[in-house]
Length: 212
Image (cartoon, rainbow, N blue to C red):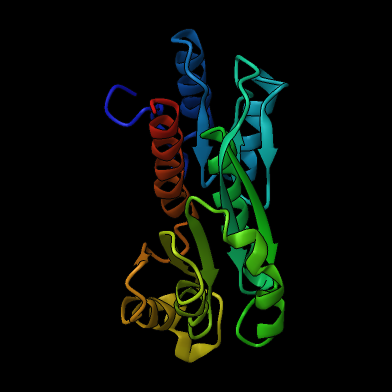
């Protein structure tokens, strides 16, 4: 927290359910708001038994404890999902931003197959501190979005697609070759990573504004 402003996040994949419960207890004892990603159903059951107030998002595969205080959310980070098949990654990004106390929303089905829907969403993108853009298939959406906005765009390739998508590698390479200079790319299906970066930017902008 001293380094980044946020508590450590728990990567649940591969951890025994009992270990995850122990980690949540330890974080709670230290006054930390626990947040776990890549949570399996049996892990979620064990955590809910010990912490009935935990916020479980099975689509995102995340668990987060509610904040101890009622602080108002800051900033604005929209999450664009090219298609509904990309929603699990988008939901992971949304839960991450909610844990970081950022205003966030998902705008789905705005992929390049229906560009008119993206155009309709441009007014709500112009107020963003940063944008998370999630797409599979050929991964073209971040390039298009980057050409319309003036804020950082964090592109997330997903493993959604047919065989030549190679589990997201094609989308990843397309995004890495994006010519829009405000687009940066994270790993395949890494909704958490993109959201964390966008959330840090939103908090720094808010802090800078409050210090003026």
